[in-house]
Image (cartoon, rainbow, N blue to C red; front, side, top):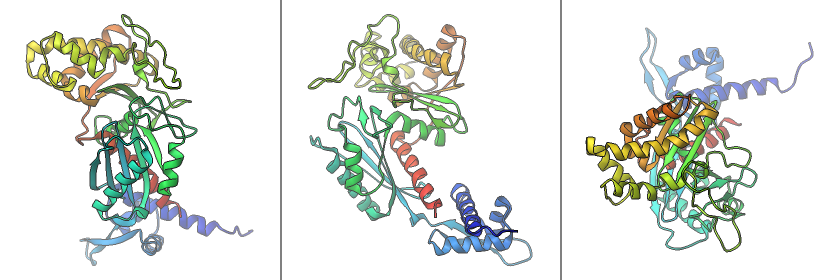
Length: 393
């Protein structure tokens, strides 16, 4: 039989990847456990772990008592083998988290752009400050993901239609990658919140769901078959522009020199934070923000029900429009308003949707406990990149 060169090396790479993926997914394991779950023999499993140790990727972290023989060594991926940075960028603050390869956040900082418009030095400074706090060299970062509002162009990686971040213009993605000397990914903030929801929240184990982000603005993330659906132009989920009965259409959404596109009209005009705050005042609930108004209404019991019913009715217009097309099965309400409304708002939206369309999805409130789901999603997305790099010899 003709000998095929390179096959042993390919098999070694496959074995190494299988063992490393298993350890990253499940935590410390013995050689025997790795062999049983990967189908590797004891000898092959030992050789695989030896190679991973030589690469500085795994180490013995303890022992596990077994049968009659000696205790078995427990192997784990070395936390410092790679680090990632996740960022959430807003008009007023930039939050940055640095995490190890296991996803454990070891430093989190927030900086104020202080009126500076150029994103490159602002982002650079935020990452450097976070790395310094984590006592991690910038060169150890294997993934950097930045979450921002707006549409991310899938071809250039730049942001479009980001009204609050005028400095994030065409060419910023390339400039950031050049400045940091590593791959940088810019992602829509609501998409990142959906990643966090699927990992840690109400959508765990759910392959098809949508996340409706009701906060200062309105956004939607679509997950189909376990993957984010961004659309050809990256605009999937821009539900604020959805035409709805009773409100004007958006007048002109084009971006022209010296002018930002209009945000008037569409679903956004019904359920933005400003709209919810104004609505709440009409029902006698005046508070400092839309989320506080909704919280007060929930706490007020029967007195707050009319306001919650109306907010739910408005949200249901968008949810129904999405569900009759995608039939996702699960809708998660998130953002400041969605979180504040909790189960009281989610149940009302579910009932309101059932009244106006033939599809009745489960509607749940977010259960992500992290105070900043967008930032957590950015870290998780960066981890996927870093782990893929580690798994590639």
